[in-house]
Amino acid sequence: MADKVLFLFSLFSLFLVALHLHIDLAEAASRPLHIHPPTIPKASLRKPKPYFANLYAINRFKFTETEAFRPTSPGHSPGVGHENPPGAS
Image (cartoon, rainbow, N blue to C red; front, side, top):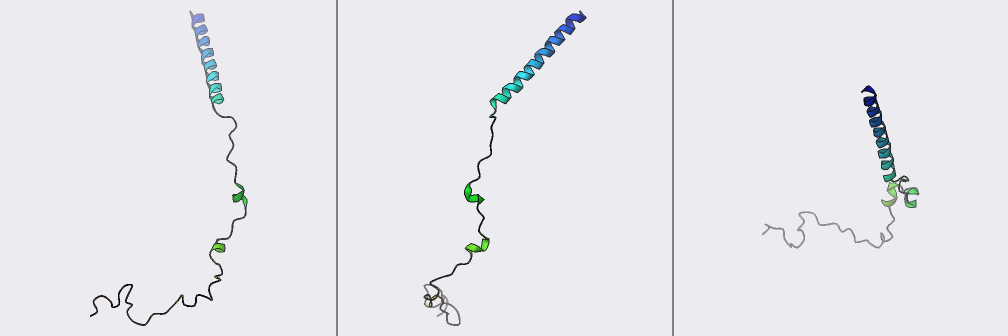
């Protein structure tokens, strides 16, 4: 009886080992083997511009825009579309 139990236990253990090996191989075969990160575009490999490069530019129309700033007369500003301020009669 002990020999029969030992034989069945050995057979069951062998079955579990074979099943374990088969499952590991099946999982490895179902996954892609060659996984590579995406390539870096060449534009990002260039040296970036300093942050102030886009902030300052020479205005070639500066000398022709002499009336771009016109000071207003002192006092209350009438606003857009009003000849007289509201409430002034």
